Amino acid sequence: MFLNFGKTLFGSFILSCFIVSSALAQENQPASPKKNSAALLPDISAIGSLAGAYFRQDPVGDQGENPARTGFNLQGLELALQSVIDPYVRGDLFILFKEEGVEVEEAVVTTLALPWNLQVRAGKLKARFGRENTQHLHSFNFVDQSLANRYFLGVEGLTELGGELSLLLPTPWFSELSFAMLQGENADNFDGGRKQDFAYLGHWTNTVDLTDDLTVQSGFSGAFGFNN
Image (cartoon, rainbow, N blue to C red; front, side):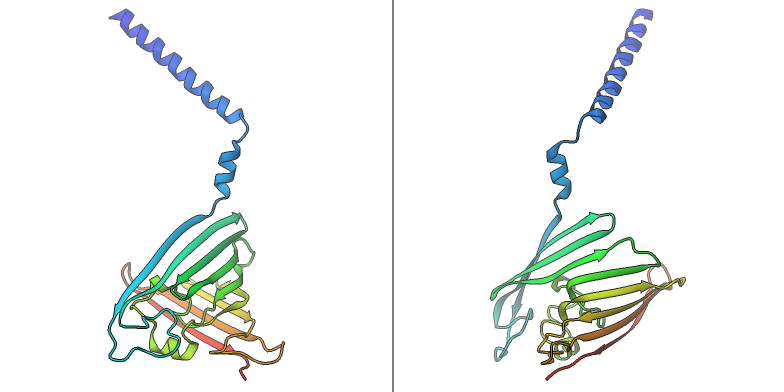
């Protein structure tokens, strides 16, 4: 019994030394190129929406991502590529495949570590005007856009090239102010004829958790621009 016990201890000691020495050796080895290249790959995901619809008379004109005919409608297949580029910046690219073609739905670079609770977004972005405009197709509460958002902002919503600066206010609840400057090239909203006809947006949102299961959100949005 004594010899068996001693052999067991010896065997465990050797195994432990092997594991430790192996780990130290791995730490001293240079990083594998394959691991470095894998770390640079973005997070990739895809989500699609197929809708069935019936109309007495099929709608006329551009319906955007809404069902456009009786029968089956591919509203869109969204491919997302997202990555934290470094500790200070992240990138998000959303490509939408539709029956009519392919479009870049959103391509945004966002800062992550600015001082004073500031954040900057730039690129082709969904403007923070209201609540629904920033949502992608799969996030809609219903199969199509709300009538208010569709007729007020257009079938594609308010999506343009531009930049946005937001400030997280120091309040006990979530409160954020944002200001955006957009290119102003959107036929449904702002499409001035002069090169200086940009669009300007302001947004203030507040979210308060009343209980663990109940949240109240309020917001104010405003926009100014030119349209011929």
